[in-house]
Image (cartoon, rainbow, N blue to C red; front, side):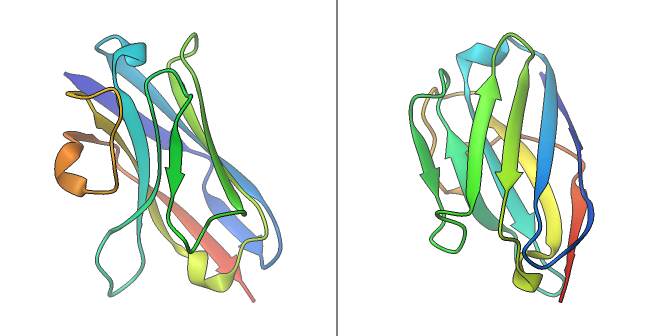
Length: 125
């Protein structure tokens, strides 16, 4: 079992920055890959980024590439999402997810078996 708790969401103006955190508990955090997804109002949940078990490999959706950075601190059991140059279209509920069965995950939701409760990010124009 893995429990995930996100924090750091809020309201920010376009062009601003936010850093999301996701604290994990339960299984050994450094054993598995982590990811971030988001769901905007009226849209399906979509992949944002993923990071491998040791943080060496990362992957991003094209829509956030160059603006968002995922990282992890295995000593603190925490994964981060640094979001810069935010746009109104980044407004969504952001979810962290654990792919507990693999050390390197991709963009498919089915690889992720534990999810946080989500944190709201709102970007005003």
